[in-house]
Length: 60
Image (cartoon, rainbow, N blue to C red; front, side, top):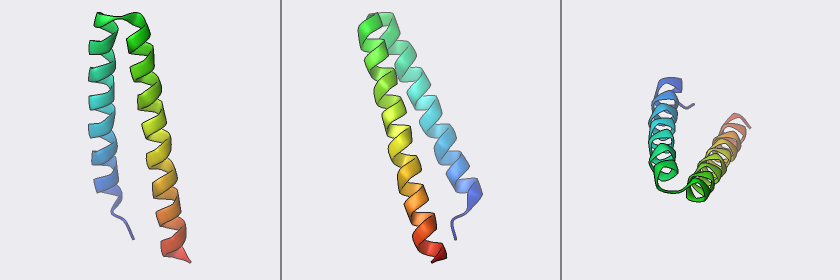
């Protein structure tokens, strides 16, 4: 079973990096900032799907 504390730390780290980079990109160009935000959301969806599949396979 996965440790919930470590997944929270990874989530906070990813969120901080994503928010910081999105803010930096928005200062450069609005379109690039929107693209960065889209990639950030896409990355969160991939991590959520991966964790979901790991939890499903470990409980089976």
